[in-house]
Length: 111
Image (cartoon, rainbow, N blue to C red; front, top):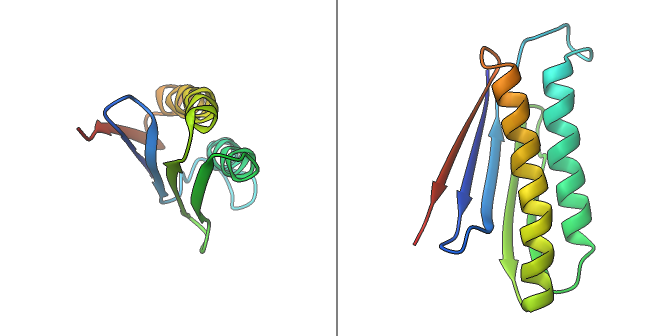
């Protein structure tokens, strides 16, 4: 089971995203659920890391693990993070809703 934990700040921006586990929906290297989650989080990390005004930490140190931590430095960064974050959350929600036996998503908000 993949567990995705997203923490939003008080204004709804992604503060952290943590992904742990394996979907076990197919053979290793052929698991569509793992592939979908991996593509979404890795693309978000790549796009955010190239934008000025956002500081990013994270990556996939081991198979089955991914982490992302964001810090916004200006208004342009805030707006960009809002857009990319919305896309990422909707994509991950879609995977979790379509494959609930393989993927769960938990979203919390910090004030």
